[in-house]
Length: 219
Image (tube, rainbow, N blue to C red; front, top):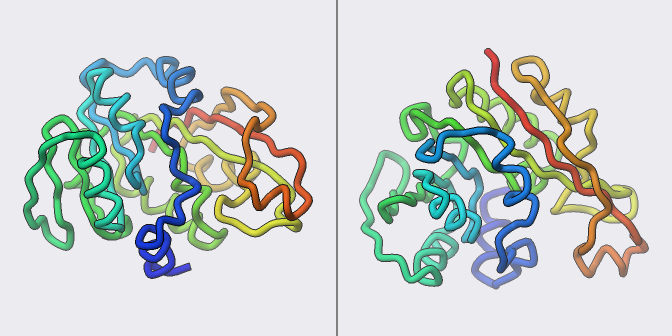
């Protein structure tokens, strides 16, 4: 799964993963992190997620990173939010004031771009990646996040033998394996998924679980 895969998905509007409403589990669980209202928040692989608007409305300064220029432009266009652009190393930085998005490769991010981050919202980053890339993603995220940063991670679990991702099934054991050596990992909720990708039904998957985790970087 390379860059071209995701760029093509955005170019051809194959974005079934995009949610048009604010994420219900974000609204439910974000307050449990206890972050300051004006805390800086990072949204990896953000696409054109409207959840960034919810976080900004809550008072946070939001930084996203997204590979696709199509997605970044669509976010600001659909939000009706003016923004400026400038080159920032390997990224094009779209500055919308309270929301800024680095357009480029997540793995090129350094501590500098997300300095001061206190919270992370990951709805679709980890589950968008196949297993080898998930480990690389987790390692890089923990490398650039400051100690004390808290993450709200959302995952989906289903019979991976019946359907291929994305979204990929990520079990609790894997979350602990990926983050547990440097973080505390707490399961906030596990529920039955109310909505699943239509292709899951076609492939015989009738149920899936959804989990929410609070992850705190301790070292």
